[in-house]
Image 1 (spheres, one colour):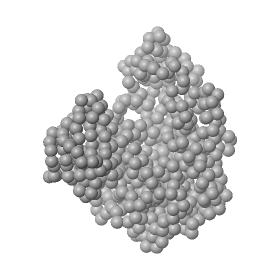
Image 2 (image 1 turned 30 degrees about the vertical axis):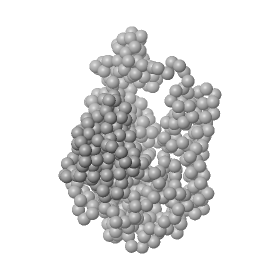
Image 3 (image 1 turned 120 degrees about the vertical axis):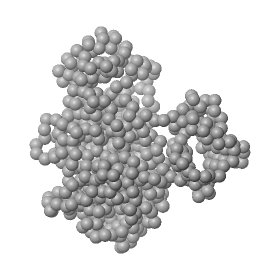
Image 4 (image 1 turned 135 degrees about the vertical axis):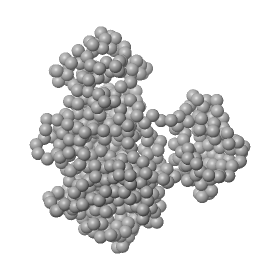
Length: 583
């Protein structure tokens, strides 16, 4: 666990600088080494791990993805506009630094404290030892806040969008085990770097932290002055922010101007981008984001906003049009074509599925899909109908040889799920996944295919999602911490339990009651007086320590402490390394 030293995490390797070279517009200084270590010497970030991506595109990579990987290799300190800088290449996201009257405002302090310290060191090495005067989180993903304790321990304004803590808790707390396991397929940390493997960095395995927001951006048009710099904010659906620096004619883009909509309704992103055009068109000469290179020129900035607006609207409208003609999500994803002007922008079949489910739910209307067997049971039956495992493998070989890798993967997936010990099926499926990965244009698709191939041949590697800084869970709030407890209740095991615990948080002056009944843990704030099994008076930090199984010292209590043991006995432990490509 890294230690705190002078307000920042220590233990990073020194990062010397190379001489100036051509790394793109605004380039100030590179990193000679992109290796970052924690206090124990463990490597938590290595942007060099995926090797060099210069030269011609190899046969094992899609040309578009190869070119994108070359852009990612441009790491270092960049000047975006006067007094606005970015550090790129010390995380999957970029850290933005806006110089003020007395210090610097940090926007999106990366995913880990160690990387944030390294980024701040690079900036200060060329712009002076400016103190951090404020912090802004532009989104609720961990790569926008996890490094916060690497730049400040508090005592400065920390701004975030309304709904930030609830959305952060969804990813960082409630679904963390599943999200981290899925992230192994998205980012491919176990893959070898280079033309045969991962093209681009994985995510930081350092210390994730959270300095809680001191103020929220509640509405579009809200203005805040931080260290003498005026920020005009736009609140974007999904707990995200865009902001304009009017005096510097620089626009910080929100996730809706670059990332696929994901679980957000594309119509809301369309409306947000239309609003952004109205708010910002003609007022910015450069636009920058956490995951993309800046766009320069007022007309180009407006065009970028308009194209992404049109993309989200197109995906929504065409999905609904085809849905109303009877097509299923899979069929829509197969036939929906993007206009040439939008084809290069990030869109995905996942957006189509999200739109479909928003209107019609998960069921596509075909009764055969209403009550299907689970994957393993279905696979056993399919393989039996096709003549056994050897016959399925032979069919898959034929389809793979004919270039139909997609169906070969489907057949072999059945063979593996029916009999995970079928080595020929596993080996051939790994080969098919590898070929699909090498042909993928999207880096997440490439990593998913290649991770599937790796786990079929080598098994599931131990995941390393980094560590969590002390106090981070408490920063999310007592409500989120208690809700995280609720999603761990083993429902059937707790069917017959009935108990109530009052939690008096003395440092916050708040009281909560949790009631376990019918296999559900219900949280209630400021409950009415009434009998409970146990009352605990403690601080929020003690609450987090108690629920994490750590000692908390003496706390004031009334009632039966066995109620707490009964509650803990009803909890289920997550499985961080669950199987994905095997049953």
